[in-house]
Image (tube, rainbow, N blue to C red; front, side, top):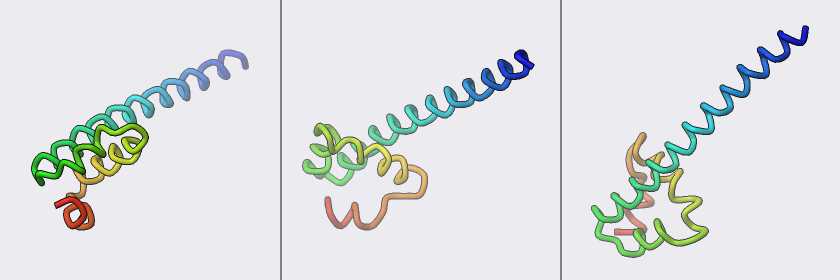
Length: 80
């Protein structure tokens, strides 16, 4: 019974690690894409938000969403 418990703990631990790595990589790619969009739009304000302290928490997921589904209209209208 102990071996079975260790087996499942290992599987779930590995799965959690993989999910965490995917999250960190997608967050990083999203942040870089946010900066890229700001350069393409020529928006210094958007660029500043992409490198500013606590606001960067939101720019990574929004950037990843923009990479997958396209840049939302509200971003273009707000920052261009």
